[in-house]
Image 1: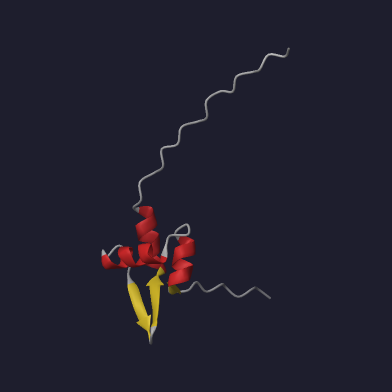
Image 2: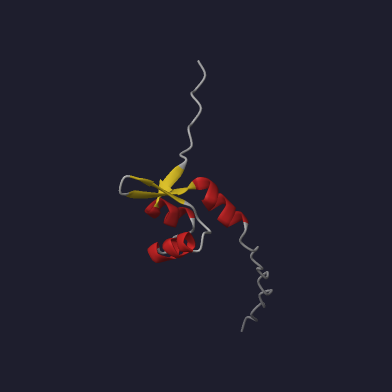
Length: 78
C-alpha cells in the first residue's frame, strides 16, 4: 500500500505567511499585499495569502552578500 500524496494548501493565513517570510510583521505582510507583491483571497471574513505569490516574492528577493568571518588571531600564552 502506497502512502497518499500530501496535499499542499493553495493559500495560508496571515500568521502562517509571517512565519514563512521569516517572522515578518503583521503590518509588513499588509504592506506587501497593498503593493501587489503578495496576492490575497478571501474565505468569508478570513484573508488568505496564495502560496504561489509567497514563492514569487521570495524568489525575487536579492541574494544575501555575506562576507566570511575574519581569521581569528591566536593569543599568546604567558
